[in-house]
Image (tube, rainbow, N blue to C red; front, side, top):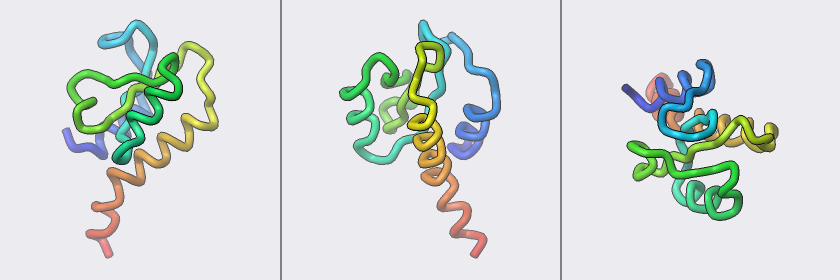
Length: 90
């Protein structure tokens, strides 16, 4: 599955508990963001299996997250994976 499809699916489908004890999203993150988020707020962010080694970050949804911050993180993730495709169209 391409990265852009993962972002689309994580923003458009219900979360599940397959790999976490919480309802969560796995989100693409720019270099260094995963470490910063996980260290600063481990209650809401974690390193997900399978894609965590690539810098992706997991965000829990069922423990009162900062929805505005989460929205910005998701928008940044979309820009991160959609940018190469957008540049190819120009």
